[in-house]
Amino acid sequence: MSVGVSLPSRPEPGDQRDPLDALVEQAREAAELGVEEVWLSQGLDLDAIAVAAILGREVPGVRVGTAAVPIYPRHPLVLASAARTAQLAAGGRFTLGVGMGNHQMIERIYGVPYHRPVRHLRDHLRVLRSALATGGADVQGPTVTARLDASSPGLARTAVAPIPLLVAAMGPQTLRAAGELADGTLPFLAGPRVLEELIVPTITAAARAAGRPAPVIGAGVPAVVTADVAAARVQAERALAHYAAIPSYRAALDREGVAGPADLVLIGDEDTVAVGLRRYLDAGATDLRISPVAFRSAAERTRTWRLAAELSADVRARVV
Image 1 (cartoon, rainbow, N blue to C red):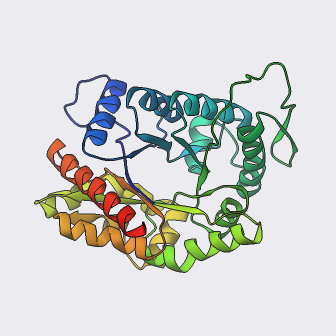
Image 2: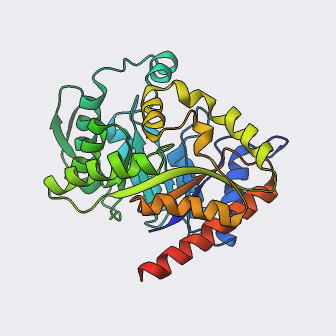
């Protein structure tokens, strides 16, 4: 059980540093504050898995993960190779988080048909699980085919620590796929009610029926420790507005009973934000990722990340 932080997917206003250098420095800052886990989203410029590999090598001790890399348009064998590379670079501290992505973006930008997405997710996960475990896969699915013998001389013989595989899922069908074929889920903008009523019971039942261990439920929660609540709220509304038009997020927002994504952002002093984060743990989240959508300064980021480290240590102490 941990409380990690998501690093910004783009440079902060006024930051003239190389974006990769900025991410490395921010990961170091988070680690120095006591944060043990950092997460990266997939943008259109830097590759999240490659960045995770670099952070894992440059910042010893910190765990790194992706939340999440779209399964379109990459073949799962290609994705598995990248993940194995990151795991080696990070010394066994890498977690691969994948997701289905936004179909409008997938089709408009990549020109890839968003065809039978749940079926594609299942086929993709079958290949990915096999490739991560053995290096090879023999799967002929309706949407994905992979035939690679694990004993092929073209595969590296280097041992790779097991790579946790998580899926960004919030709907019933994708949650069942994640429970059966992956190690857990990475919901974002799914409030405590949605976790307790839908996500936790659905994925847990699917994992149990498949004979798999209890799943990881790593909830992504936008939060900021600040004295200027009103300004942070404006920033959050601006950053999150587009999620309200994406069907999967809209369904989760409606189920939670909130008008928009900004209503789920935890804003205030340390005590206020900590109380809000604990509500997610009480609802069944096993882990938390604090999202940076409402940060307006390095000082706010530092206060928030320090709280994440303190809460993570507190949660672990209670579990022990």
